[in-house]
Image (cartoon, rainbow, N blue to C red; front, side, top):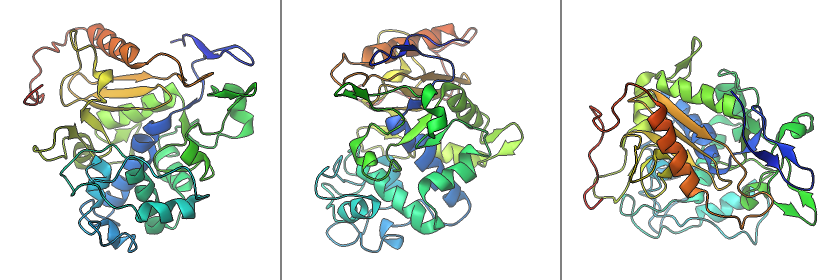
Length: 337
């Protein structure tokens, strides 16, 4: 295996390596926060159908009472995409802002992809475990799966392997999260902040394809993986999401080109603002991980979506002996699509 392209173009050019560490932005949602919530669900510490206010009593009234943990995971809570970047500092003040948010729609009425949902999940995990999200994930997920280069706030000893993001005044953001809200919460958040490598993500994907087990370590029961990675949104909603995971929405570009071979409906994955994506197909037992730093040296580059689609199709076409046009058990297309 080898890496392609450049990890850095300025101020110091560097080639991407197999073990380059990337800021994976919203992949944090499905590699840290979602599995943390599902472990707590599996252990009976919480239930995904619990109302949010059971753990965050201040999240009540004005349409908040009916919002459940499931609604946060499926982005069906009705909450808007983001809180303002201004007027707060630190995790506690961030959560104070988040719990005051009034839903724009009733639960399960509208799909609104929202970082607020995952900031609230972060706080639920903290209150349920009495641990910060980074510590819980290291102990319960990354450690057991031997994902040794995965975590928040990579130590200085690894900065020589980290791909930088935006460059400001000739200085690149290196080992510090790109997401501005996660940066204000010491780099640890439920919606962004995680750093990882392709080999580590491959271990995580293999665990999911093997129904929760990797190298003799069982993280999840098979039924927990199924719950997380199958459609959990009502049919009346215009999209299909799992718990945390994307299945069939406008964000599903890693499935492949619309006029080419695609991974089947019922495969799942996620994308991140810094340009990367993961897509996992339980039917062909295939996964595709695409890591890049689209926001280096600036956020104003071309869209990464066409490349994501092309990579998805090329990956599907590379799977020999599997008919992607006739997949038993795959979901039918949504009406109107």
